[in-house]
Length: 246
Image 1 (cartoon, helix red, strand yellow):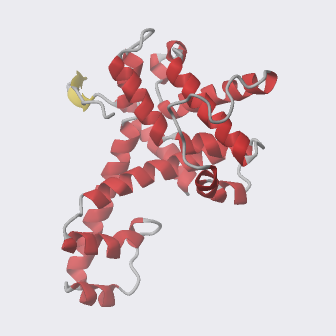
Image 2 (tube, one colour; image 1 turned 90 degrees about the horizontal axis):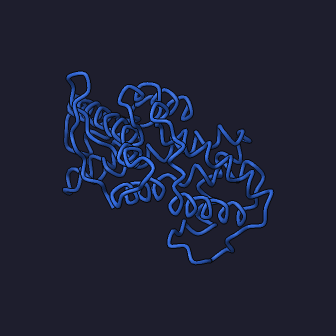
């Protein structure tokens, strides 16, 4: 369930209250709003957790079990009480919490069997395994696999939002044509032919591509911002994201 953003003023500037800041502001006693915010974040950002578990050597089924158990425990317990406000990055919190959970899980019997009473259900194991194949093929460390999948999840969320902004037939056609230029160097192949196909000039197509890339970047920043407590952390978190992506 989305959390209605609220504006707050910091050093004379206005910032929107993010899902993660709503969770942290609840402190030692979660509110209904903070619980919904945490669930929304977990539903979006579970793929990095699965990738980490797989690179730690868990089988696909065990990785799915561990990911689901971890999120269920996170939602049911007040694990956020130990989060320091000056380290309020959801990505960092998830990774540390998952590491601790896996250590505890390895030392004790699993308290929850597969297919239990959890209300949180991740994707089917086949789909989850397909998602993390790039990290498995590249033999990344668990931490790097987590960051890579985090980056890909953030960018996929931003791309979905960008696609939703181009719903008219003409907009959808333009978005489909220019989507390949959003990644990598941003260069378009066969620009003249593509412009002719779309019925625009090459110059107009180049302008449209530039605007689309700029909007995509802003949406990526917005996705990252929703997982931060402090706006000042945005630049560093974006650096981590793009380093992981490249």
